[in-house]
Length: 346
Image (cartoon, rainbow, N blue to C red; front, top):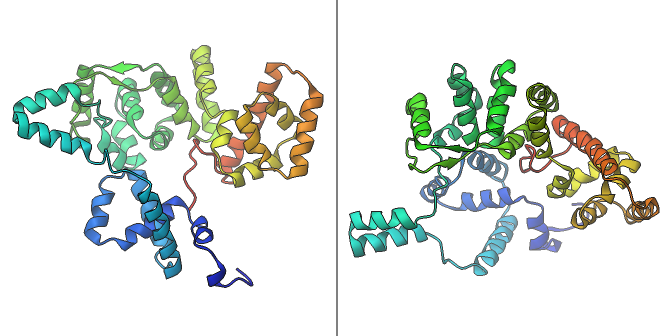
């Protein structure tokens, strides 16, 4: 920074330059190898990847920045309670000591919240190409079931590597999935053999559905999206519409960062923006107005007031045009859309 000495920069200003992942990476670099490795065991594949990359990016961080990150971390810790940390193991150990392992397990099976672990969790650690090769000769229903269990970003990559002619069928099957009974899970485990952990419970598991299919589609490129939705439309127009309605919407823009929104707003027509904001929630309006200059925001507000009542269909059409531009810019890497393959920038 020209004309500014390091002493003049506050701790807050230093930490504001860093992403949350970079701050975590600095803390990880301060730990010993064993402690850092133990923490990584609790992270998912994508989290390990992003954190590992961030650790490389901060390896030459100066002492002032390290101190600032530590100060922020300690301030956060002081505001938090430790109640609940490790509660599962504590409760299990207490019951084991009090009742014995057999009785304790019986009680735990009735009171333990449903596990979020999935029977094919190991696939999250495989690359998309390996999973696609594993699935390519399987029945469409098996492929849909496996993809439903994957992280949405990974699921999209796997889908894209499958033959084009079966992609619409897979999304259609995912969108119509509801529950999977224990027998189906056992069959899935048999088909996948040793490729994933066979540690599922015998409870029915909620998978798939229109929202899951829509989230997977959010991570696909625009041309792939059009091709798959077009094929589904020919088979089931109503299902295609349901999937499309649950995909990235105008309201989702509120989750994106200000810089991306500023770039997007410069690319859209003023008429579309005015019409779109007429039907937007107040919170989203404030978010977008905050990404404009004071004069531009005032002009948009005046135009909205002059416009008066408008048809809902007109608002939706304008919002769709903006979303199409946003998706195109996201595909090109010009902006990052949170919820549509938008990884944190480091």
